[in-house]
Image (tube, rainbow, N blue to C red; front, side, top):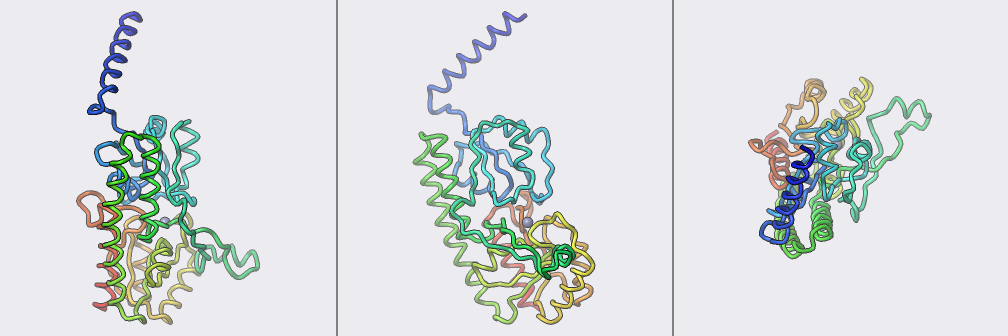
Length: 313
Ligand SMILES: [Zn+2]
């Protein structure tokens, strides 16, 4: 029994090495992407040479995601693991430890200029307890909401794939260049859309602060009751404070997000009299049949929703 197993193993090793010598049959690079936006970038850069497993799937919330045993298996087998970093993936260190993966963990926000986030609403109670009257400053992890930053993610992915698979490097670099040109076009579309909105109307509400980099890059103000993570529920006082601020600022539109419960936004919409303008994709893409199954479609969907709701109001 053992003998025949060994024979079978030996045979499969011979078969594998026979395949490995022919580049036409080179096994694809096993890539784990922490969430859908990164998986989409990796697909555009890697093409047929990579096989991608995504940890947090469509419409998933990476802040509060609980990894499964299957995630640990994928991590253990991976050649390259691509992550956002800046504490976006709350589960990351636990999963790396549990899987004992030997793969390179590549942080795609390397080279991005981080934005500080000072909570206006979230954790207001804790801040009052500390006697400061304001929340503590933390780094905003949602860097991918700026297309300029997306281009940095793409370059980092190409570099990581080149390091793991030098034979494919020319292909990765060519794919990255072609996709970056697409992102340049997308950036132009987003800027033109914002320009078409009157300055005084460039204020919208979402449930959590996922759009700080978008705001910084394109000049649209986002107000949100939940802070940069979805981990903590906002208090009644936070919501009341937002409602009163909304009334003063005359926010032009209010949106639910694909990753969060719409209840809070519906409550604020009810109290402020602003109609819910639609769904913004914040921290995850949609499924393949949804309106935001790629990064490019996500940005287009968001800007179309924002423009439509503001100009239609
Ligand atoms: Zn988020």
